Image (cartoon, rainbow, N blue to C red; front, top):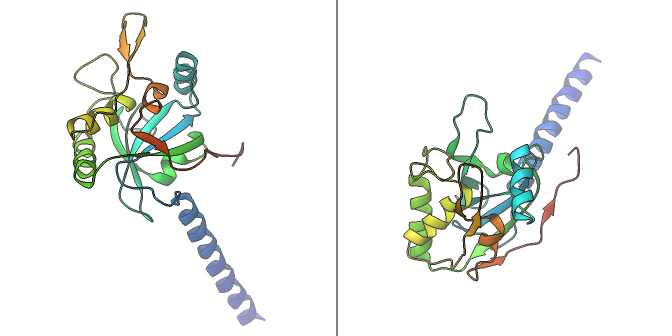
Length: 200
């Protein structure tokens, strides 16, 4: 009986590991055709996300750039801190972290139509910004849409976006909103929105 229980525990542990592995793989899966340098948009769950969407009236509040490859995707993005003790700024997170239901209600990947050389440069430039503070209307920092736009611009690709004038208290100016970026003729949706069920 004891050996039977031990065998059951071993088989149960193996099943749990297999399920965890499958879940991790599913969280890291994107639509076929995703490449480094493509953009991943999400509708966030935080109060700041609601504020962005109230101003923008778009479907998304945040964006990052895919880096890595299928099976080990990561996202470089400029964000207020999402990890205790980590400062606001440009960070690199796993895809699973970026799309976790605690931070994302939905997400979608948009392909940037660009050559391989420009793509490599854009990824390198975005990664080189790691550690820069998250700031709005401050040249010493950057924010999510500006980060990916500048990376592609400095890589030689004009995304042909327009900036929206906003009369923000103490910070009036022209800002690149998520919907402004989505309107770029250089972007095309790679897949439909992935909507995460509430409480998942």
